[in-house]
Image (cartoon, rainbow, N blue to C red):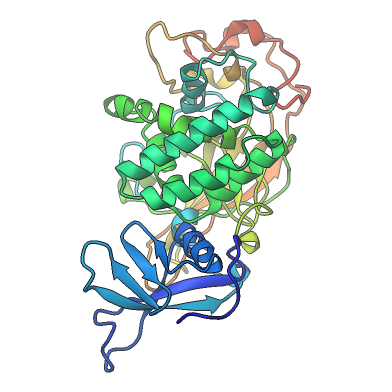
Length: 423
């Protein structure tokens, strides 16, 4: 029977592992132990601290009395489990979060949409919110958005066979339903930084934006993933961009994708981040490491819609990796509209969120990974933020892309950005 330190809602104290070698009862096989996901650990910890006999997971259940994991569909399939005390701050960088998932060869990044992803704009429209209605300046929206976000997470979890994980995530989120917007946002960041299905399905969906054949797929997720995405995107705390920092991130690319970046550098074209992109050892857009379960990783988010140009592509013979230097721009000027690959939809209503102006630039280096999972290797992205044109505003309406469905000419001379900073 398991005993030891009491479980808590934090992952910093207790972790649970299961014996994962082919025959867990073999005395000759080398032992191999694997970790449960972060959310599974929360479920197990809660059941253990409440002195329940079992903890129900999606594929199995935990028998605390006999220290076993038992398969839900076949009770004869049992594996030993054990409890370990460990501080997650000592954990290595998590591979999947800081290395992009494989992406379409023709579309390794998004088009330039302005400074807000079409996904965010479509969420607002689907929820029937006006142009000025965001949770950060309309706290009365919080209970409704939190409830819809929780329901959507549960629906997605059921469809993926992750109902138990989804219920746990939704329970944590709904506990903040009547809290201040700052606390709700911190909770969303915490949930996003957990290893679970949530951040994976959210980013997988948003990566489809810009593909005509996938338009119906990502739009079908707006009602389920949209409310959580909006709460996560609408940061009420980090009002000003932190400059002169360094970003690190890896990406697995095919040779033809590297050529795409090389062509962008030669043609001085822009692209945009389609998803919430986790970076390490930097602060740009949102500093989330204080809310994360992994603060030593210093996880930062680049939000969807942040644009970049490719400065150059180099090959490092020492590491046998390509180094791709990106220059980030959180706010865009109209002079780049000839390079914009907009997300077009005939007669789509325009939105004030796509007001363009020059803001802060960043140099970022993407390291293409010839990735060996077993070797626990990882490439990096390096970025140095600059403050080049903080007060510039394009004077002529002709600079703007009037055909952009996410642009509204009424806000050409609007003196503030969405964070209240003077342009």
